[in-house]
Amino acid sequence: MNKYISLFLINLLFICCTPNETNNQNLKPLKSYQFNISELEFYNEINQFRSSLNLAILTLDEHISAVSEDHNNFMIEQNKLTHHNFLKRSQHLKETLNVSHVSENLAFNINSTYAVLNAWINSENHFKNLTGKYNKIGISIRFNTENKPFYTVIFTR
Image 1 (cartoon, rainbow, N blue to C red):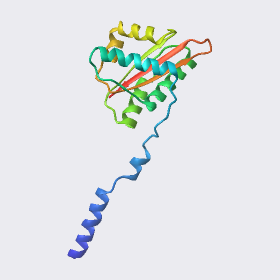
Image 2 (cartoon, rainbow, N blue to C red; image 1 turned 45 degrees about the horizontal axis):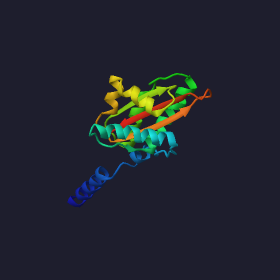
Image 3 (cartoon, rainbow, N blue to C red; image 1 turned 90 degrees about the vertical axis):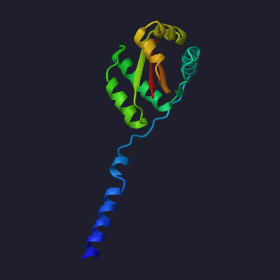
Image 4 (cartoon, helix red, strand yellow; image 1 turned 120 degrees about the vertical axis):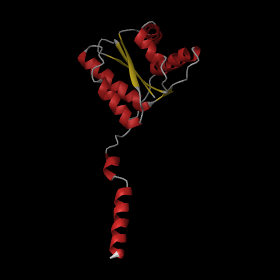
């Protein structure tokens, strides 16, 4: 009888301690992203600004940038600037990249990254995101059919 109890406990231990295979199947694949020159320049401008305030330099992340691009494409389709579905983007990044905080800054129809950054510096909420305790950033700049730029920048930690 002790032999059967021992086998039962060993099986129970094995079942309880074996990783759940279905959890691994729920992981979303990371997206890749090809940065254009304007996005890389904007990334450098943002980090130069943060550096001037003695803040940590942000790491440019392809997956976060791909999520930013998806949102730009959505805004272009809607033909308006909107934070619509921000909670979905935030939750996706939290689950996929295991981050705890997500924020985003948007801009539309401003023709230079320098002008966008200055507008954000002079806006309380955008400034808060620019100077927050983040460590990764995603950047996308896309143009609509009228050649007007849409900017989505997502900050995470």
